[in-house]
Length: 449
Image (cartoon, rainbow, N blue to C red; front, side):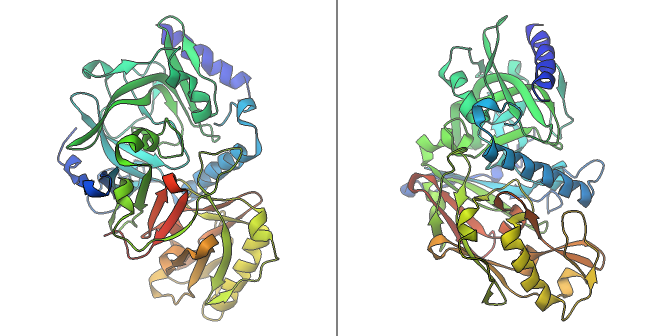
């Protein structure tokens, strides 16, 4: 009863302050322990092979782009507002990844186990989030519809709520940009994870056993046990945070496997992976660029874009424009955003080549540059994104363009007045490595195999 009253009160507080099936679990494997160890988990596309989590009802592409805009606004807000004054927004393991369209979102998810005995859930992975959370019974206020049964803490022998005086509770402000609160009737810490698009989760800060592979688990995993979760989470059970923060899943697993991870985000035709641990950096010819830190949000992953080429020719951008705008690489943003000073000459250079072969079509939502034709039949100039130190993404046609309808294909970049964001569409089929321990980000081509 205490939490119901508390969450009811807190809901109005937010308005006033600014508004188990085990067969798939064996996909996870343990990486070679000689390199520090780790776990590799499978990522599946929502509409890919083996996916059973198709959106219900189907999600329109215009909705996906609208949600993407909300994501970008939230990231911009986090970089332009002081965290303490803004409560509105807030060794190695490898896991298979799937694009989140299959669970009603535009992001990617993995399957992990929680509790003793473990029950398995489809969870969105997010490099922009620190705190992980999962919907929990009794859903005191509201739980969105999810594909898996809702987690029942009372059925887990290892579940433990964390007190208001715990060190983990004190760390919530840094992890969520929201102050922790206390349910005084039970002395349990209450978290708020809010995302700037009216999506949020509120509930008890808790600990339980996290299982990432049949033989790999993390006792005392800190996460939010959600009692009121509303917004754009599709049919997922919750979110797994991969940001640079001690409360993120990555931060908590780093003591066991090393502070690093890599992934390959698949298209709808295949599977990908998430690998956690130092061993995840081995076996691929990564080209690295420095991992930078933003002073307002040190948990996000920044890097420096230094050039863009189209058809082998550098786009003419005014000196210093690349350095004036912060660039984030993000698993949760779909379409890459670029500031006008970079986007405009880039778009013009691309159109100059494409318009000799294909007629223009009307723009679609945030995609202002479209052509008549189907992607599979198009001859597309190579686009290269170059980063500090020489690391690069040599984009294939599927990374550069996006077919939105029969006979209509659009330039998969959008303009933005704030930050630059390298979205997940441009990352698809590339291996991306985050070596947090030595502050570097790497890229390798070759697909997700």
